[in-house]
Image 1 (tube, rainbow, N blue to C red):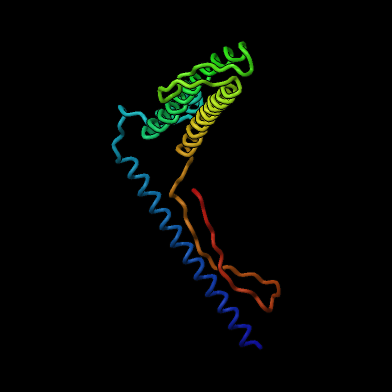
Image 2 (image 1 turned 180 degrees about the vertical axis):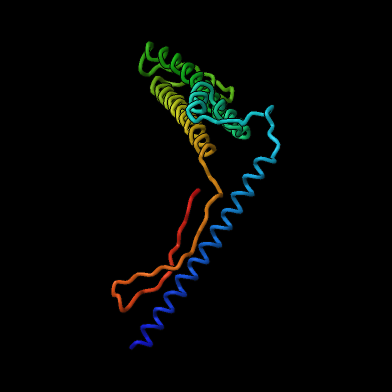
Length: 209
């Protein structure tokens, strides 16, 4: 009984001593690393002429809301500007085109409606041919191109909102602190729920500096 108890005491002392030695080595390595980093900062030449470019998320958001693509330029993501311009250009083109067709068929529909329900009106179609269309046929085309135009307005609004969200999220990601100065320490641990039967283990410590 005494021999097993003494063996446990010796083992515990060796275990604690190894942990202390490990901590001392880690502390010494960390101290040397700090000294070396401080020395490197002192010896590093400072360029006072070049200021660090700082991105402010709310500035990027406001600029994108004012002028689509301006926030992407502010975030220095120049490759996104042609995408934003293309999305806006395509939707604006469809808005103008569908609105012109809507206005043209609406004028013809009003003319046919004022004549009679069965009267036909000559309308130049998109292929250049002239067709006789009734008021009901013209009404269908008016409704179609009005929906197309309004849908293009809605898509343009979505693109505008996506442009703002993209500028805001990108600015936040660029200002998020992703430091590599993270250390992981492995230390021995000892818990004794029962004095006569201690439990040995290991403890992991993840430190963010």
